Length: 148
Image 1: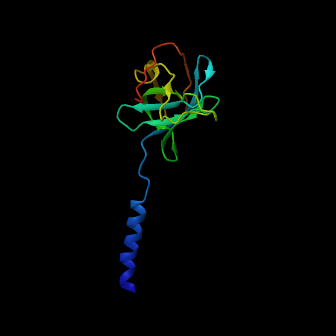
Image 2: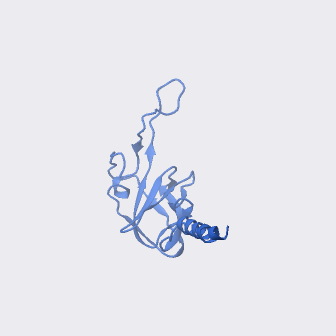
Image 3: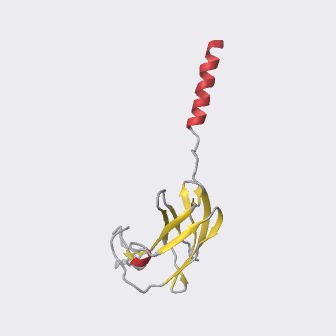
């Protein structure tokens, strides 16, 4: 019995170390609102892409509010300068009698390319809490490319 204590203790220690979530990079909490033509942009996907790290994502609610998520339960974005992309697709109305949306799997992008595929937006994330509000316009070319 005594000979099992050390191997079992080592196994427990190695399992605990191996199951750790790993170290997160220096992060800042980021939230804000997205408006287009002065109105909240609902159901938009907002992406913060740093130069050399994983991106963070958020989705706006009915008021245009979002919070960025880095991974799983880890909210925020890495500290530093980010390229910001905003995309929002509108599903076509169904012509069926029951109404609703077609199940085509693709929607029509409604945000101009200068805010997503050809984004001109940037934001500097600082440690702590960051408020990143974007008031964009519908003016400009919209690119239908199925993602960026």
